[in-house]
Image 1 (cartoon, one colour):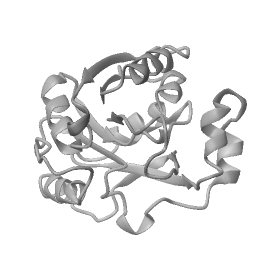
Image 2 (tube, one colour):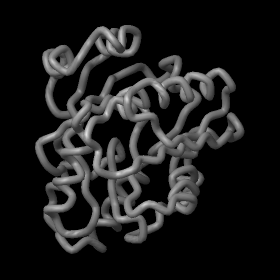
Image 3 (cartoon, one colour):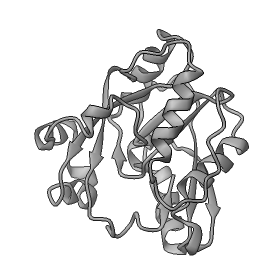
Image 4 (cartoon, one colour):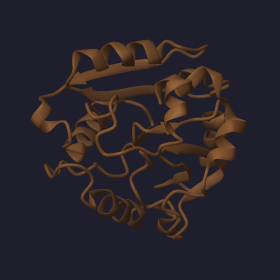
Length: 211
């Protein structure tokens, strides 16, 4: 994910990424990824105990408190962003009323997704588009936790200690939409899509990370 964010072009806003990790080797890979492009990222690495790495909601809540930017985006580590994603998404956000929004997430199934991790520099957007099997979790219309964007002060992400997602993402989106000016069910904005690189639960390289 970080490599694709470092490749963003004409992004009109600064991006700061908060990442929780528990393994030293992951921290080194993260630093390399954040610097691997024309738009190096502002990166804050937050080390946590291995027993707590899956407490996703706790991490999101803490990171939101640390940020001073106008918006908070809570997302998964297994996403790949096209180079123009953020320039297009920022424009889409500007045209909507303030509140909770998401984006379209296209699924690249496993094991075919592995090539997009192992040969990252050799495969581009056309390869991703051909490999997709459609929108990921399309029925939820952007309410799930793959990509959740809010004005930072709209709502504090609940510091729930449950491990992994465990429907906390749906509870959060429901509460955030209730505070939004628009209440329409479809929350995915604009033309740009991100790509979900599917994987087994123990996929090496992401098992020690939470964003």
